[in-house]
Length: 175
Ligand SMILES: Nc1ccn([C@@H]2O[C@H](COP(=O)(O)O)[C@@H](O)[C@H]2O)c(=O)n1
Ligand SMILES: C[C@@]1(CO)OP(=O)(O)OP(=O)(O)OC[C@H]1O
Image 1 (cartoon, rainbow, N blue to C red):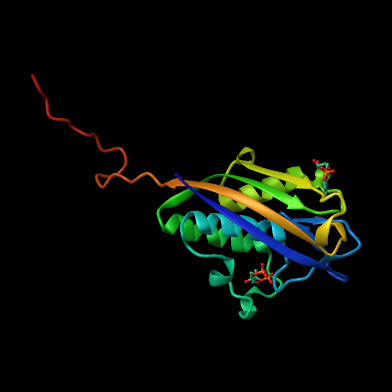
Image 2: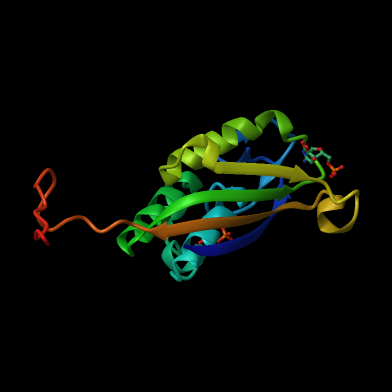
């Protein structure tokens, strides 16, 4: 088992939808970014990549690359999961915190968990998302942006038998 952590911040801007955990959350403004600026999914990507010692989201999906302009961050999470699987690991579970003064996120959290889980190839119950304000303090409290933290656990993928599926294994008899 290995663990990784992720943290990200994006600032609010007018004229963009607010996307968190792959869910469009009704709000007066969205977040600024090269992708859809889904700060929660970015934190999950970083935690996942970090657990496998694969660097971070900016290394694999640089904001200088036009392919990622406006992209759904769930696609980046799917690709991060592929990279981690290629390295011989699979995700086990994820726990996250979104730090936002506004809007109220609780009604949207079950759908966020479902979308993050689907992108990682997990059951919905393996992903937990929590929301908190900062009681009005700091940049989050001034409603300048949203921050997110994530922790992801991964485990080694079981080795496939070289004999092939369904082949009987004959152990030597003793005694
Ligand atoms: N953007 C948010 C922030 C918080 N919540 C929910 O409210 C609870 C209390 O938050 P405090 O910051 O006052 O501790 C929190 O546990 C969340 O359930 C929310 O839905 N959206
Ligand atoms: C996701 C990427 C790539 O589109 O862009 P942003 O949406 O700006 O997000 P950020 O967390 O600043 O960095 C990762 C970027 O490479």
